[in-house]
Length: 191
Image 1 (cartoon, rainbow, N blue to C red):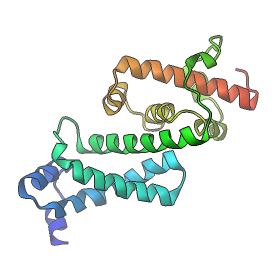
Image 2 (image 1 turned 45 degrees about the horizontal axis):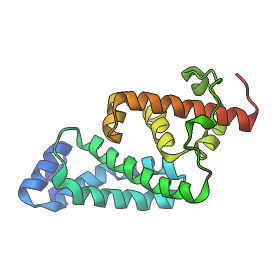
Image 3 (image 1 turned 180 degrees about the vertical axis):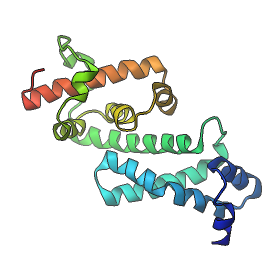
Image 4 (image 1 turned 90 degrees about the vertical axis):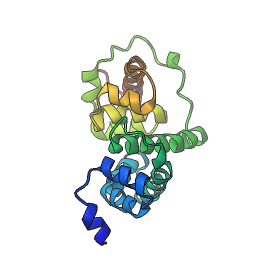
């Protein structure tokens, strides 16, 4: 406990540096306590199951601890940790969706006549939108959550998902189009 108090004022990156240079891995408990709730909440936004979100948060933070020697400091620790979180949840949802939901992978399943705009997407009924988000591909859901729930800039989304900014823009456009189409089909809404 005295160790936590002594280093509590240190930044995340300073704590990582201390962990790597001193082999004092008890310091990771500080990072764990700083981020557990945030990681759990992010997992819950994907899973909608409190117990599973808590288990995932533990797994993710354990994975982060194991990968800490690979942290290069090119981004903040929090960005690095959220990247692990997103990828962990995406991998889980990808497997789950393959088992339970139809394949919506083909972009030609959506008519091109939809006049999709970001405004249309943002104005859809929230509860109905959540229903649709459970039906789309995990990758699309992640993109939409990163953009509209977490308000991450395109550059950060691209870096987290390891794709180009142009790919992020294109995939976001497709995801919004798909959600609007599915929303209109399911709830008979025409804007």
